[in-house]
View 1 (cartoon, rainbow, N blue to C red):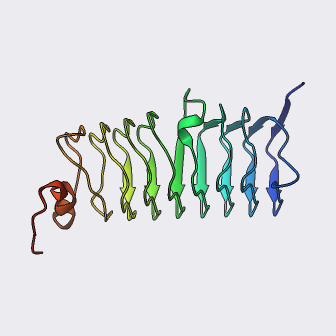
View 2 (view 1 turned 180 degrees about the horizontal axis):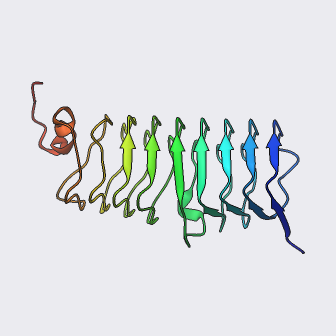
Length: 191
């Protein structure tokens, strides 16, 4: 089947749940107020695209390519980045709900997570070197053998990161967030 190539197109208020997005390559496109919930985005390439106020919950992402992608105000419950094409995977998030998402074994250095919910998100064995978590809720997010060197968690909260099980050299934390590094000791810290 021949793949399509679409560039610089805006998709606004489209329901892709029944009318699936055509497989192909999308470059410099904008997806605004679209509903992709439970749809299949496998083997589609997105290059330098913006997703704004979209519902991308529980989409299928087998070998989906995301290069230079910005997600703003999106609902992305159960999003499986670990199933995506890892080559040049580059993303940014602003005001997104990424609860129950998985970044397992992904390499996403210098990723910006801003004002987002990342509850119960899996960052196990992920490379987050020099990433920024600005004002993010990381309640029950999993960090296990994760590289967070030079990452910034100073304004984020509800995280629990074991320094002995993760690479955290030169990571930044606020004094109020230090308790998230000591959770495993079950001690009480007064602020």
